[in-house]
Image 1 (cartoon, rainbow, N blue to C red):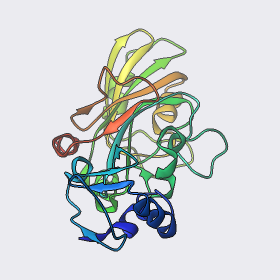
Image 2: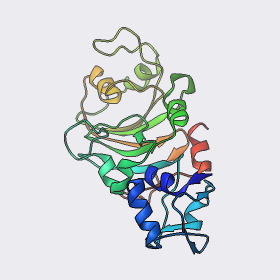
Image 3: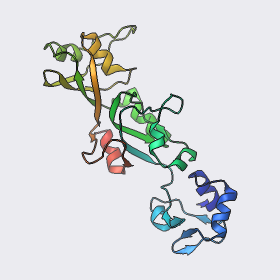
Image 4: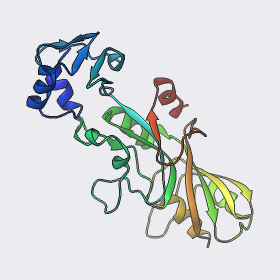
Length: 239
């Protein structure tokens, strides 16, 4: 159970004083009846958006919340980097949610595809933990044709990246054409995919992540679009 004013303030609808004004003007409705007291308590259950409305719209989902986004090109994954951020693609009030939303790992500005954003700390750490060995698949478009030795080199578990002292874990390369391939990795080192191909004397001209675990980017989700991840989809990540 949670107080209505505290709940809505944590969801980014405004200060508790502003929530009290919404209640006063009968703009907060629970189970078909206007909430009369901002201090009234309501159950925090997954079906809350079907039971509560704020200004005639379903209330935002409470925490824990995980979002699946199709990250577009030229958008950053950090509040601190310059440029437009993925958080700006979400409702503006969500930037004031408590707990705050964070990306699960990052895709750089020049990489597109499947991105997860969550306020669920334990889930985030489970996905990114090296112990989970969560696989991430990328489609890489290359400047030069593949030479044929890359599959074995990436799978060897001995490939070293420049300026690093530990070899990469084995990775799976699946050539698609002369200048493109799927690469599946289980680590998340800085610019790892681009640096792996650089170690082979090649250059990635476009990079797109289409899968995390067994969770694939939906074909009908356009760049910049997002939706809430279901519990069944979360389970796919660890399949």
